[in-house]
Amino acid sequence: MSEKKKSNKSTIAQRAFNKAACAMIKQGERSYDQNLSCSYRGLNGLKCPVGWLISDKEYDDEMENKTSSALIVEGYLKRYASIEGLLSDLQKVHDCYEPEAWFRKLMDVAVTHELDPKKLIKTRRKLQQQDEFIKG
Image 1 (cartoon, one colour):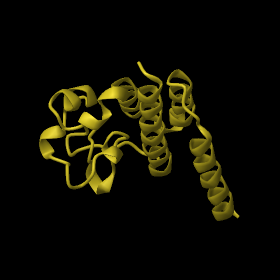
Image 2 (cartoon, helix red, strand yellow; image 1 turned 30 degrees about the horizontal axis):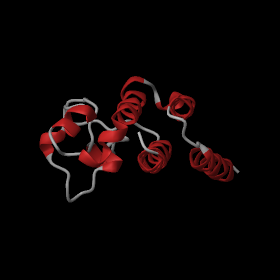
Image 3 (spheres, one colour; image 1 turned 135 degrees about the vertical axis):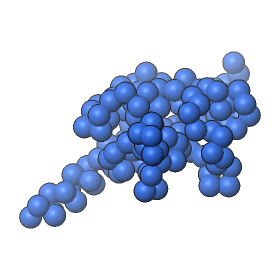
């Protein structure tokens, strides 16, 4: 892989990680549909990490109950084909772990994919400060 392609892939990966991981931490709960299945677009406006990467314009109900890899193959998320493994790992954190474990697991994802967790750490710190302020 050329240096330019590596750089582009790492930029796409970092941006996707920042957006999805920070949104997950802020949301603090899983995105479910009415059948209690994890959902890209769930009840009450909740989203899974990959759901945060899907614009309202491109979202289609047909995406639900499919893996992010299947969405890429079907042409929905072609722009993320180079980071399919990252999307799968983000989806796994959302679907398989309780929200209390998300930060630690997302840090693991950052290490695995050689991403900078700085924005994730900053987002968590802000939420902790807000929580401390509210508690008084």
